[in-house]
Every structure is written in structure tokens, then in C-alpha cells.
Length: 362
Image (cartoon, rainbow, N blue to C red; front, top):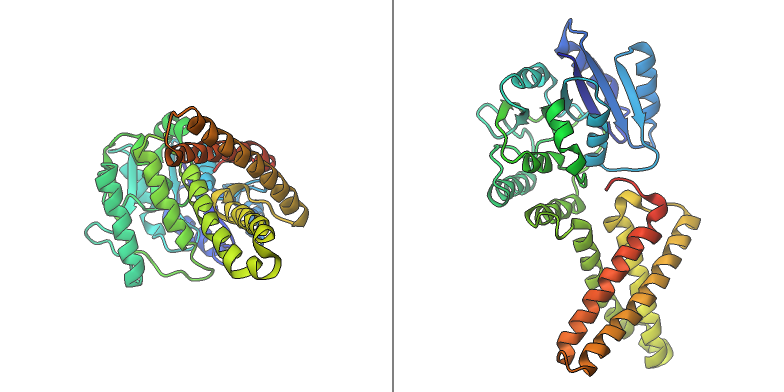
């Protein structure tokens, strides 16, 4: 059967030729496959090299994404573009064992999805630090326990899936963060899983994408899936950023502005400082897939954000005093309702207006 091998890339120019050569070696004399490089407009011009490799080998194609970023969405885009009846995802950094590619594709004869696992017999995480191993194992246990996923390595980025099964769940995928396999397994409702053990190799060139932000994204995505998407991971991020703004506001008031302009002026400047902090963190984290880049883009986005936040504050106050004046709720409960309504108002308007011009899959 024809197979599509998906390589999501970002700044992998140094690794890509060796990765392509390793795939060719693993596939041997087979010609019934294609390699799709999905590149997020890498500054090191990985996409340019992929296009050059494609000119030499028609089995290689490159999809350069200039309007969005994110590993999970890159994988979903690549899977959607794949023409093969069997689709396989792996990194281009040579940390996944390319010799296992034929085994993963063949395993789809017995199961709808096959996973390259570091935690089965004969598998290993290689040279990971104790911290990284602990975080990975903690995330794995969380997936298995919270979502009921029956796989030894649901966080793997090395897996294969039948195209027909992928197309069935594709409309319900909400790709975000780094671990799309977790969501795929969850949406497939406990599928039969074939596992192929492999040893995770050290990175040859480039930098690992693992960061604290990735870890946060994972746990927020876990909450989203557990709540059946009633609570979105993006909204949770927005709420957490809003809470950080309260701390910033108090800190700015007492540590900075109060010493220069007095209480009234300090209050206004502290609110403005917190609002700017909220915008910057939301742009970097909450809406990272739609992030404003460039001075004009950021100024425009910050202006929209501040105006919307101002209207949200007025709505917050109106709801609070309405509920309190009508004696429907005590003041603290009324304030909580006002905060909730104002936050929801701010979130959806910012989603549709502030970051609308950069709309792309999360």
C-alpha cells in the first residue's frame, strides 16, 4: 500500500538531508511512498532545502506554512495532505529510529494505529536527563489514568495511522501544543494499538522544542479533553494570564508608580501596566499560534486588546452592581459573577478581533 511519511520541521536544515537519506535507506527498494515536509517558515530556510531535495526526488514535497505555527497543527496538515492509505509521522531531527518505519507501516495490517514506543520491552529513552524522564512518565501516567488511553507511550511523536481512520476523526481534532497523538487516541475511543519499540536517539543538530510552556500546554489540553471541550485550554490560559495581571497590578502600584505620582495616578498607571503585561503574555502564550509579530502588528493588537479590556471592565462593574443592587447576591458573589462575565466577554472579543487577522489552527 502507498504510504505518506510526514516530517514536521522548524529550523531543521542541518538534519533534513540525513533524515531523508535515512528514510530512503529504511524503505529500501520500495517506491510506493512519499515524504511530506511541513515547515513552519523556518528562519534557517529549512523549507528552501526541502524544495531543493524535492527537485531531485519527486517523492519529496514541501508545504511551507507562512500563516501559522505549531507542531500539532503541522502534523494534522501533513496527515491531511498525505495521499497514502497509510500515514506515518516522525521528527526530522534523527531522534526517531528510521529503521522502524517499515515495521510501523506493516503493523497497520493488525491495528488502525501503530506507535513507536520508548517504554515497551527493548525500548529506551536514551540519554534523557532524570528531569525529562520524570516529566514524560508523569504525562504518560496522566494520559493513561485520566483519559483511559491504553498505550505505553501516548506522548510519542513517532506513529502511523490508517488514512481512513484519520479522516474519520480529523473534523473533531483541535491541534494545539506538541502531543497530537494523545488527542487522536482519545478521539478514537480506545482503539487497538500496535506498538513497535525503539530507542530514542540523541539530537545531532539544532535545539529541542521541549520547554516549560510545552508542559503547561499538555496539562491544559488534558483538562480540555477531560471536560469534553466544555472548557478550552486556550480559555484556561487566558484566565491564568488574567490572574497574573492582578499580581502585576498590585506590584506596579506599590513598587513603582505610587512613589512617583501618588495614589490616584498610580492606580491608573498600574492598571495600564497590568493590561500591557496581559497582552504580551497572551500574545506569547495564549495565542502563540496567532501571535502578532512586528512593531505595527503589535501596536495594533495592543490597541484592540486595551479597548476590549476597557469595555470588559465596564461590563464587569455593571454586572456586579446590578446583581448586588437587586439583592440577588452578596457583594463578593456578585463580584465573582462580574469577573466571570467580563472575562468571557474579553476572551471572545479578543479571539475574534484582536487576533482575528492571524486566524489559524491552534
